[in-house]
Amino acid sequence: MPSTRQVFTFLALASLTAAAPVKEADRKLRKRDTLPDYAITYAPLSYLYSGEKWFPSDITTHLANVEPEEDYTAIGTNGSVTLDTLDSLSSDVYLTASDGPILDPLDGTPAWLSSDYGIPDSDGLSAAPGLIIAAEKNSTTTDVFYFYFYSYNYGGKVLDINFDDHVGDWEHVMIRFVDEEPYAIYCSQHSAGSAYYWDVVDFSGDRPITYVAYGGHANYVTAGSQDYTIALGIISDTTDAGYLWDMTLNYRGYLYDVDADTFTVASGAGTGATEEADESADWLNWLGRWGDEEYPDGLLDDIETGQYCISSECHYTSGPTGPVDKNLERTTMCEDDDDCTIFDNIDDLTTQS
Ligand SMILES: *[C@@H]1O[C@H](CO)[C@@H](O)[C@H](O)[C@H]1NC(C)=O
Ligand SMILES: *[C@@H]1O[C@H](CO)[C@@H](O)[C@H](O)[C@H]1NC(C)=O
Image 1: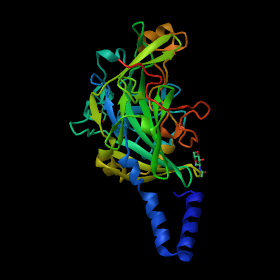
Image 2: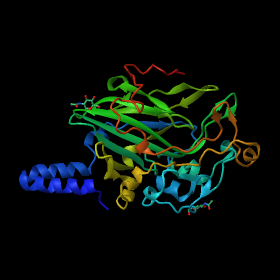
Image 3: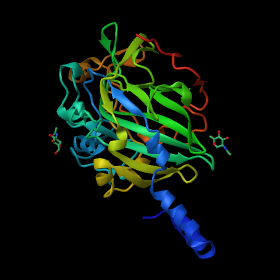
């Protein structure tokens, strides 16, 4: 059902059509349905790690293998949630793996979690659609978000102990366009990320190169080893030019209206386009979690789930919220508007190997 605001916008547009030359109204309406060309022209080309084990996933496949839980109690069955019903769920819901806890992720995860079907082919085409969301900030500035979804996040090891595994993993790269020209690029990395001026990153033709780290899927602009700190010490992220993933070959496209806080479907490509033709954009409004709730840490629980927590770090953490919760309305280049530096060289914060 259209919201009051949509109805109002429709009426406003209708009166505009009556008053203004038809062509102008046509242009505006058309503009609402498609992503700007520059969103595709300058889209990142991403490399998954050569030894990656948890590949890009189609969100519909993910939904087919989870059940909604609230407070560790199932409120629906395996596969009962679809993209069409997602937004009717409470934001307290966790989409929980129907297979149960993954006791040893390195010793094999169910096929839908490792998502081998999402391994890109030699052209960079993944069967798992990406997500591209354009958010116009004002008359000069538009932020285009490239969202990467994986069904499993393997968190890595500190002193040979594995932390921060979770079901569901949303990561993103954002490119800010000013007057339709790329200005800077932001890469999500764990709870934060890094921004760089456009000219300083590496390109293939017009397109910036990004690297996706093994397991945890943080995004970087350089290959090699990248260190990040958790409470217990250092975890090294590993990236290389393993599998080229060109999201523009297969994606669902959306526009995000920053003022109205609404999403609309914009044309996609590949299976993403086919699938989204029958979908609405409403699922993007859902604020719940795309994976299991962090398992309790207690002796009996631990035997059942493999959970352990040391200091504030746990083996299994809660699944993430979706794109709507990644500060799409940001004014700075970063997800955290209060802590944002745009680097003018790509050697900052990274350790080349
Ligand atoms: C959940 O449903 C999917 C799709 O029908 C099926 O492949 C999978 O085996 C089911 N999982 C469980 C644990 O029953
Ligand atoms: C447009 O938005 C960007 C991002 O918030 C801001 O930096 C810029 O000053 C704004 N420009 C105008 C003309 O309002």
